[in-house]
Length: 408
Ligand code: F3S
Image (cartoon, rainbow, N blue to C red):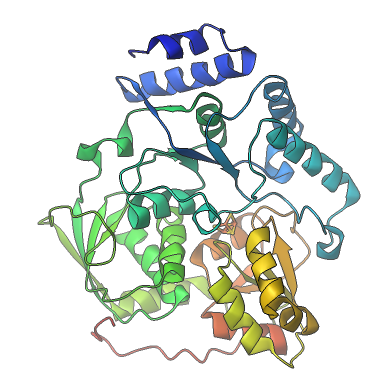
């Protein structure tokens, strides 16, 4: 790789141990993937924050880097393993909390913003079209590439942290024009009208097109919440970290000749696969990816003057929760017995063995609930999930739709 004089100084230790380690990681990565040079990045999103996943080895690696490492660009953090201010109300042990707080202190010492959210784009880390960034967290990476038109590979925690400490990333993969073209035309002939429908679309696309980048047609409208839902499920179920939707996302690739059609039956198949035959629900989670203020507003409206029977978590960024506090949504939600889980989520918190059946509107959430926590899952709309929280039972009022209905 060709390095600039500044990058060579980083590589040879002229800026200290942490920067040298970081540059070594990036050069090794660049050489593996055939990058010719580094590109400066405008921002970084770092995953691998939960002590649950890091363990003691990860904690020591971070504390070592924090001795002399400082972020050179705006860097935000993915969810941690607990609510950083009020972990007790989520049933997290003090031992776990002590280790998790050490992880957070190491990141903060490196000048990293302790945002602890997988939706950095909702709280101020918002790259523009064509800007190079180095993000980890598959849903955020896919949102940055597809919805914002920024350019990032799907970084791991260490390579994203290395980009933060150097302000650079190797130029390969989705940083290059030639790798951002669509490979397959995916025409949607199904009605999509909720976050769970878009989440189901990601499940279907992952199965049908694998890692090929789709140019999607037939989708006439999509809210930011629906797009973030699709961005979470598509890479989780084997799809790529970039898609284009005609008339909705900003890039304008050529329409590929190879075509697949997504039918209403395909969407129904996703709902069937993500739902297990369980009536009683003891855990409901909304906010995968982290809930927007709009979603919290809807939940507050649905819960007003009601009580929940199941444990109900709303995972969100702390900054978003502060908006909910001011708007009165928090009071309506907490009066009903539901809880905010700020800074964390149901996938990275240590929840194994605590619940049996989880209801959620996210296909990605189902994947982690089953894989990491061994929960059974119920998958449906946000409204169905709220009703499950109130009654403690699953009742689907989403009607399977007729074949061939067009999107709208
Ligand atoms: Fe975010 Fe956790 Fe889902 S990191 S995308 S809420 S699994």
